[in-house]
Length: 375
Image 1 (spheres, rainbow, N blue to C red):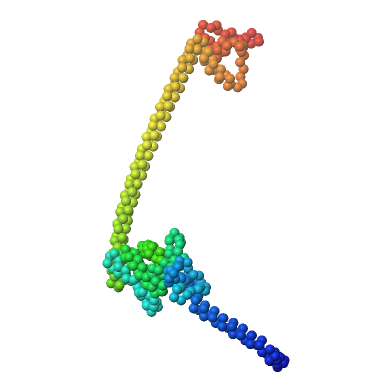
Image 2 (image 1 turned 45 degrees about the vertical axis):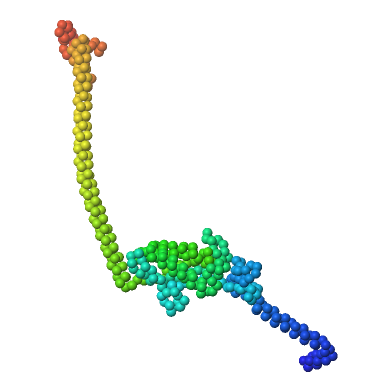
């Protein structure tokens, strides 16, 4: 099969030599055009890689200078000698102030910060930042763009890093130097000064299109003699604080004892006062009761006297024998058995005579006779 096809193609070319020349010319022309396009793209174009933005600079003519609009990742035109594209990274970057130069070869070394009381502290700091692509306001802060960065700082990574490290060095030292040696141990005081340093860095770097993402204090150390002095000072302050607290506690204990003794005396006084008041009230009650009982006895006596007076008045009118008869009537009423004869139950005088005997001046009662007329 292959032999037959090869023979056929040879026959075609051999039979049509002009057609083979045309095909060959077209292939050569396409290859030349592709090569020309590659050369043109290489000479008159540039690629902005992912994670970067580009800034075009025009050397002369209309639009001379840096363009404010950033070039996004992709292919962009350029003309040698007329247009240049600078690349600016968009990733998070770090400026290290670290004493361990082997682990951090790009470090600028630890920062030596003087304190307000004359000591020096070595501080390891990391500054995190990134470049803002387009100028504008973010979070209430006005930022510049990458064009401002290249215009005022430079177009190379080394120039950017040196400038940012210098600003960070100045602001961190200025802010932390407001702390005393002891205050470096206070995380709140130290954190507040770090925030102030970060704010000051924002003021200087935001117009250049640099945004600070974080300021991290990794480590701070003193010299050995400074550590001993700080320890002694802290110990003295702790002893002073302890003595003050002990004194305050003793004073408070004295106050507590005084209050307790005063309370006991007050309770005793109140107890005595309550007892005396109770006795006074009890005596007043007894006096009041006796007065009322005496008054009642007086009223009873007066009533009895009045009754006796009224009784004497009545008896003076009806006679004392009536009174005796009334008294004896109760006795008669209580008697059981016996017979009373020859007595009119409705004759009161006869009853009186029978009970008390004949009254003076009264006729003698008739003698009772038996049935045979014998008394």
